[in-house]
Structures are given as C-alpha cells and as structure tokens.
Length: 380
Ligand SMILES: Cc1ncc(COP(=O)(O)O)c(C=O)c1O
Image (cartoon, rainbow, N blue to C red):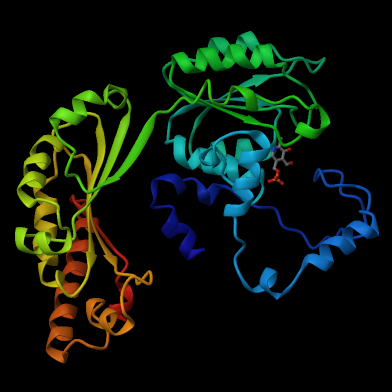
C-alpha cells in the first residue's frame, strides 16, 4: 500500500487509491464464465496438439520476437509496418491510448455502456468523460456524439461491435465522426475486438485520417536550422519534441566523437531551435565513454543554457553498448570497464555521484533540465 500512495504523487495516478480490484476466493475453473467474453467451447484436440508441437524451449525462456509478426501484418493488411503495435490484449492498447493522449481534465467521449475498462481508465486518468447513452431499444444517436466533439475533446472511444450491447455503428456514421474529429484534431479509438462477429472495420480509412498531432525527432542537430525548419511547414502546427545526440561538451571532443559534425554549427543551430514556439520538449544526450566522461557536468550546463520559457528540457546520459562494432578489449576501456586505472575510476564515480545529486536536486525542486541516466549500475 505504501508504494501505491507513493505512486499517487504522480499526476496520472492521483486517483489510484480510489480504484479497487474486487478479489474473491471463488475459483470458477470448469464452469462457464459468462461475464468474461471467453470462448465457451473447447478447442479441437488436433489444434491444441498443433500448438504443443510448435513449442520448444526457446518459446519459454526468451522474449518473443515481434518483428516477424509486424511483417506478416503489414503484408496481410497492405499497410506500413509502422501502423501496427502489438500489445498484451486490446485492453493494453486502450490503456496506451489513455497514457499517450489523455491528461487530467481532458474531455473524452465514450459510449455507455461499453467495455468496462474504458470507464476505469477514464477515472484513473482523471478524464472529463462524456458518455453517449444507448436508448431502451439499444440504439445509439451518433449525431449526439458528433455534436459533443469540440476543441476540448482529446479522444473518442467507440467499440464496434460494442460490448455488452452487441450493437454496430455502420462505417458511414463512423466516417462522419472521423471527419468532425479531424476538424478538431482529436483522436478516435475504434475498438474492433469483436470484428469477427460482424466483419466491419475502419482499416481502409487509416491512411486517410492519420490525425498526426505530435512528432519526436532524434537528430544530431547539424541541419536543424532556420532554413530547413521553415521548409517543413507541416511541422509548424503540431507538437514537436527533439532529442539531439551530442556526446560532448566541447568542440575538441565533439570533433573526435561526432566527426564530421561541426560544434560551432550545432551551437548556432541551438540559438534558433531553442526559440521554436511549437517545441514541447528539447533534450540533449551523451553516450558516456572514456573520451567524454570528464565533461558530464559541463554537459548539464549546456542543457541549462537550453531551458526556455519553462519548456520540458532534459539532459540524458546513456551507457555505451557494444553492438559488435568494437573489439572487446578496446570496449573495456571505452565503456569505463576493467581497463581504466583506479584513479580514473574514482574520478568517474565522483562525477557520476555529482550528476546523481544534481538529478535528485532538480527533481525535488522542480528545476529544469531534468537529468536522466542509465548508469545506476556503476553506483551500486
Ligand atoms: C469491446 C472490448 N474491447 C476490448 C476488450 C479487451 O480484450 P482483451 O482481452 O484483448 O484485452 C474487451 C474484453 O472484454 C471488450 O469487450
């Protein structure tokens, strides 16, 4: 319970204390659970055997490889691989949408009744939930739903077919909803968990209504200047986040580690990038290694100089990985491993402790930039 109340400090979990999972000792194996939308008949034994025959140790001791699955989906539905995300059940996909799109007080429009977790997430994420009710004949007035869409609406959730009503919204009406939503730049989540019962889908409209609202760049920042930015007009009205990988806090190290990047060009570009109005996040990152570890504190100073108008700004230190591009012996030194001297190790640890102190200080005092790192193992 202590950890739950700690979580409650965080914005998205403020209401977690008021949400309970009802637990009981009632085991219902061997009975039919009509409230769980489970398959009610056994699978044929040949089908179970087919699955069993496929299982080998690899299936049980490794994480599954999802990339081939994306390839299959992409080919089957003739859509780009990037348009799919595999989740642990559609429940998790719904939750991901809340996490990504809904902040406390945001308006969302849902059907009522609908899949139970929609109401749970609406409470958990403190959404201002507007429910569109079915009438006694289980009919839905989609015009009522369309009327509710306005600039405050962040997300509309429609299960089609809906559960538990089993009702269908025809594609023509869905398109009317999508059109109005597009006008207000709001997202529509069409939950087709029961697609197989009616074969109706919005898949063909995905590319027409992408409703792209935010984008995050990972860049070296060398070409991120006024000239190119002004050419990218499509990015001017959406939320843009930028993560610039630098790996150095001065021109000499930059020349060594980021050849042929030019330090002065980068610094000049920063003056422009910093003032871009629709930038919602600006971060710089350093892959910490033998050549740059002494510059970590200066790197934080560089991050401090980028803070502008309270925009979310971060400085990130990442641990170096060997992707097979380095000889293992060489890597031991580069990665601050066994080959450095004890003085160098002591110096590195002192700097890292200082970084850790600043990281905590900035969090506790709500100061930007936020400092992030994955170097905790060194501090153990
Ligand atoms: C409409 C609807 N969407 C999603 C889900 C969640 O399904 P899953 O088991 O894939 O998480 C359910 C489950 O009952 C549902 O009724």
